[in-house]
Amino acid sequence: MYLSLRERPDAPSVPDATRRRPVGRTVVLLGCVSLLTDVSSESVAAILPLYLSVVVGLSPAAYGVVEGLYQGVSALVRLGAGWVSDRTGRPKWVAASGYGVSAVSRVLLPLVSGLGAVSAVVTADRVGKGIRTSPRDAMIAADADPEHLGRAFGVHRALDAVGAFLGPVLAFVVLWLVPGGYRSVMVLSIAFAVAGLALLVLFVPAGAGAVPVPAGPAPPRVRWRDLRSPELLRVSVVAGALGLLTVGDGFVYLVLLESGGFAAHWFPVLYVGTSAAYLLLALPVGRLADRCGRARVLVVGHLALAAAYAGATLLATRSVAVGTVATVLLLGLFYAATDGVLAAVAGQAVPVRARASGIALAQTVVAVARLLSAVGFGVLWLVVGPTVALLGVAAGLVLLVPAALRLLAPASR
Image (tube, rainbow, N blue to C red; front, side, top):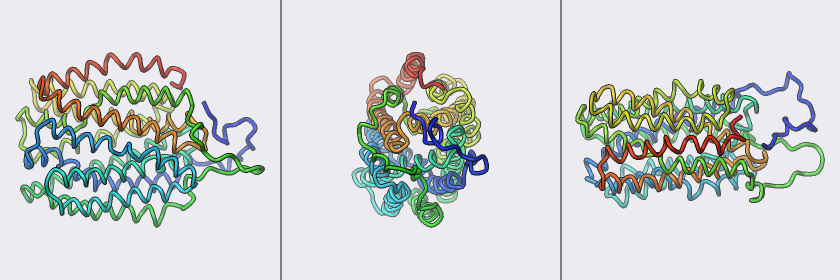
C-alpha cells in the first residue's frame, strides 16, 4: 500500500493544531456541487427509461444500448481526464470542464427528438461525467484526513444523494401536474446544472486537490508506470467483474412497472426511494468501511444488489408493495457500500501524485463493464424474459462475491 506524505515515516511531523479535520470545507462544497448537478441529471434519468420505452417505443434491446451509453460512455474520457488532472495539478478546472459539458447537454436535450439525437446528447452528458469524476474524487481524497477517507467520501456521497433524491421528486411533481411533461422536466434541469457549475467555479479553492510539494528536489510527475500497482490491478479486476453483473436501475424499475402494481407517473418515485436509502446509509457505511476494511465493504455490498434483483422478481410477484420497497432500499444500500468506497480503495493503491489517475482507471473499468452489462442484459431480456434474466444475474453475483473477497484480501483493511 502506498503511503501519503503525511503517513511516510520520514515525513515531517504535523502539529495537532494544523491537522486537517476528517471532513473539510472543500469536501462539503464539492458535495453541494454534486447535489445541484444530481438534481439536474437525476430528474432526467428518472424519466428517461419510461420516455424511451413507452413514448419513443424502444425495445428492451434498443433501450439496453441507450442504458449502456448512459452507464459506460464516460469510460472513453475518464482515465485521460484523471491523467490530465495529475499532470497539470489543476483538478478543479478539469472537473469544471466536465460539469460544463454536462450543462451544455442539458440545454440541448429539450431541443432534440429521435433516438439518434437523444443518444448523442446522453453521450455528451456522460462524457462530461467522465471528465469530472476522478478529478473531483482526487480533490476529496486530498482534502480529507487519510484515516477518515471513508467518512469524507460518505459525506460527499450523502450530499450527492440529496440531489439524487430531489431530482426524481422534481420529475414526479412535474409529471403529476403536467401529464406527459417530459420536456418540462428537461428544461428545469438546466437551471440546476448551471447552478452547480457556478458553485464550483466561484467557491471551490483553485488549489483544491493539489499535492503538497515537500522541500528539496521537485518530485517526479505522474507517469503511466505509476499505475502498475498490484493492488490497483486487483481492485480494477474485481470491480470490473462485479460490474459485468450490475444491471442498470432503469431495467430493474421497468421490471417492477411490468408487475402492474402502480401507474406510470409513479415511476420517478422509485428513484426517490433508492436515493433516500442511499442518503441515509452513505455516511454510516463509509464509517463502517474505515473500521472493517474498504475493499471488504465494496465487495460485500454487491450482495445487497443481488438481493435487490430477487426483490424485483420473487417478492414483487407475491406483493408488489413489499417487493418494490425492498428493491429500492437494497439498491440504496448497494450504492452506499460501493460508490465512494471504490474511489477510496483505488486512491490509496497508487502514489499520491497519481491519485486521480488511479481512481480513474478503476472507474473506467467499471464503466466499460456496466456498458457491456446493459447491452447484454437487454438481449437476455428478449431471449429468456426479465424475471429469469434478473435471477440469473443475482445468482452470478452470489457466486462471484466469495472469490472477489479472497482476491482483495491483502487490501481489505
